[in-house]
Length: 426
Image (tube, rainbow, N blue to C red; front, side, top):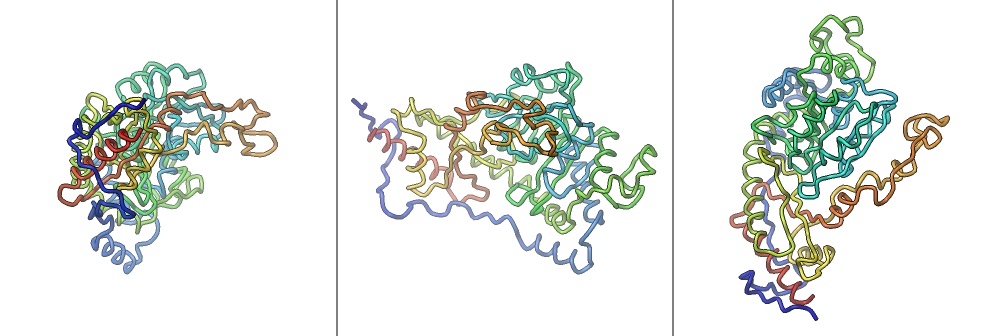
């Protein structure tokens, strides 16, 4: 028999169910302002629309100084920023790169295109970040890189991952695409590994529409990144040493160059990101604190020394057994019914994609690292039980960037009242 859960423990009023959502629009933020429009218009008028223009150079210098790195290079998306970093450290045929299984495919997609093999790691279900112990267990003599992903704006356990890298002589490349401005023990995310990479895609905290950035302190990594993607930028500007001078200005003839208009827009947004992070952080922390007396919902753990930022999404973990058996699907439906913009699951775990289960003959003629005839064994459902369970139990609450007054408490009240009502019915 279902237990009797009254509203009393939650001090909750009960929303009256109607055909219309009861919550107003809680966010007044607009990503694009007149400042971005003016920059793009001015750049267009002066024909600053291609190549390594003054606006691009200035942005790269600002980003380098913001992160605290020696070198910075912009690209046309986050995928090519990561690709540049992989090429920078020399990923090639037969090499293995370890990344978390619950990331976006672009974190690892360029590795098989370079002849390398993606190796997925399990996650820490308390944080949704990659599990260092599992990473170390997957290292082989062929492992050349580890890719921590600071997913959703949370921060990986960088002490453990950097120590693993040092211990085994393996490069660590940080994917910071969700975590613009995040820190770990006072250091900016992206500055701790051999390279750091960001996406500037349209929904990111700093957006170029489409764009990316890679930073590094290593001159070899930087120059190789320039060679692979910065075709025909002004000779002598990108290169620091004479080692690759004879290959300039064309490099390898591939263009990963950013679009100047997008970078101009991103430059305006870079000036606003600290305030954006402040507002998002204040909202998230109030809502997380409000979850403390709501059974069956818990915020993600944050590692000691980590400072979240970017807040690309706002995941929380649902525990049905602590909510009188209310299913995750029922909870999401209930929250949507009162006007909260919530979702489930996030990214699909990579090991469930046919590409990585069945493999694919990338280069034809039964060649390439994902080709079954060439040794690819593939992944199966059940290979990563923690990540699989987390996907089933993760709920994404709305991220508010410029909330209306008392919006954070409205969100907490809506969650509390919905949970109370569902538990009474269970």
